[in-house]
Amino acid sequence: MPSLRHGLQQTLCLRQLLKPQWQRLGSQFVTKRMSTSQPEVDKNLTPPPEKPFHGIKTARPLPVSPSYFSREPGFNDAYIKLSTLLQRYQHLPTAPPELVPRQVWKTLTIYRQTSGEPVKALPYSQALAMVKRLHSIFPSMMPGEVKKALQEFKRDIDPFRNMEKPASLDKFGRALGVGRRKTSSARAWVVEGTGEVLVNGKPLNNMFGRIHDRESAIWALRSTGRTDKYNVWALVEGGGVTGQAEALTLAVAKAILAHEPALRPILRKAGCITRDARTVERKKHGHVKARKMPAWVKR
Image 1 (cartoon, rainbow, N blue to C red):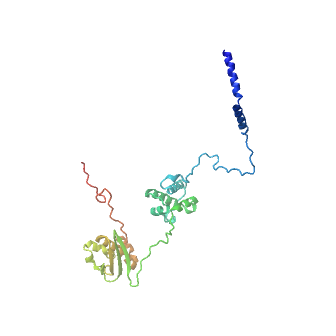
Image 2: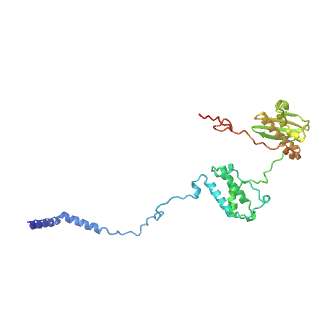
Image 3: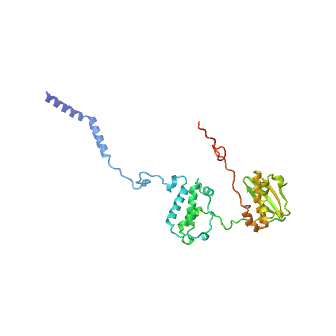
């Protein structure tokens, strides 16, 4: 029985293989296998375009400078270049101060405007110190790359043409002097006379109540012994009484120099032609005044 059953199963399998559906599947399979051959390519067709960056898996733009991600990339590059040049050429001889060519350098404000970067004061002062050290090298021995690096910090100003314009007298023999102190400003017209002084149209004793302020206003005349030789007509504005009196000192001194330039050493020794740049210190946040702090309470 088992042999008979096995023979019947083989007969059924052969009969199923001879059915039409199995013959169609076989012909399709042969057709597909025959169609896998490469088709003929027309040689007249244009070749496909080449792929860009062939052989490169990843591509990204690289910054020009390593300082690209810093706060001041341009200034950082200049600072590194100056330090490198100073280390490379520090052995070169330097010229004495009187033989170093005069040059005007950019201030911090001007450098910020030209570069467009918020450069801080301390790094810029350090860079300017290196610039001046490199500039002191003998001009005949200075390398070309040093000259090119210094060009970024130079100002297009001729220092020899930046001269103070001397004061002169007008057709009436008057000399005008301008002075400032704190927030006060003064203009004084000085002419040869008998020693009369008018400030804002008032006599000196009516304008300034304190004797110290009166002496400050005409200190330039008293220190040179010209109290009874010149008449003064002045206009003052802004600030307080003391500031106006000290501003008038500078204005009268400048006007006297127009009449007698030889008095400059005496006026300078008396402190009349030196501008006092001191001003009131600003109040800070958290302070009672400029420097006073609030009282500390333990509890």
